[in-house]
Amino acid sequence: MPLSDLPWWRWRARIRSALHMLSDPGFQRTAWLDGRAGYGDLSDAVYRLVEDSWLDRWSAEKYVGAVFRDSAEAVAVNAAVLRVLLVVHKVGEDAPAAAYLGHPDWPEAVRAAREAHHLLAVGDGDDPGLPPLPLDELARLTARG
Image 1 (cartoon, rainbow, N blue to C red):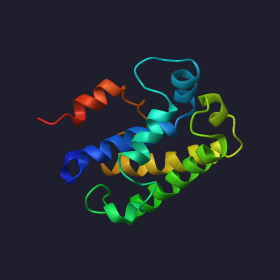
Image 2 (image 1 turned 90 degrees about the vertical axis):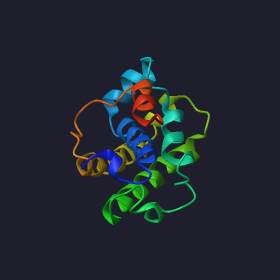
Image 3 (image 1 turned 45 degrees about the vertical axis):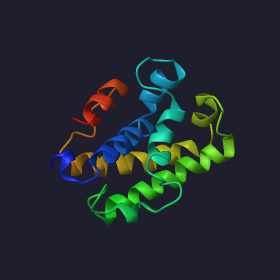
């Protein structure tokens, strides 16, 4: 299925981008710890996951049919949001990436993000194993036109 078949597909693309980055420890090391340009930092990913979508305030179930295809996707996204925010709240919002990645609960956040990313990517007919898109490509994909 194409990504754009859902009414709020741009939000979905941003959420998928965040989940993709949060689900890949190798990417996190090269982009967030080593400073690979073009991908933003961990705070950018968390912002795309929760602030743009309000998933820090509302259940993803609210968006089934608009952003998420079904309840399975919504449940997986809710789990990822909760796991990521648990670490963010324990470490603090302005901590360096190493503090998040080194937190004992981070592997569980990565696992939950991986499950959600996999479901959403497969639901869109994409290969979940491809590397995350740079932010400029995400911006082009979601540009209004």
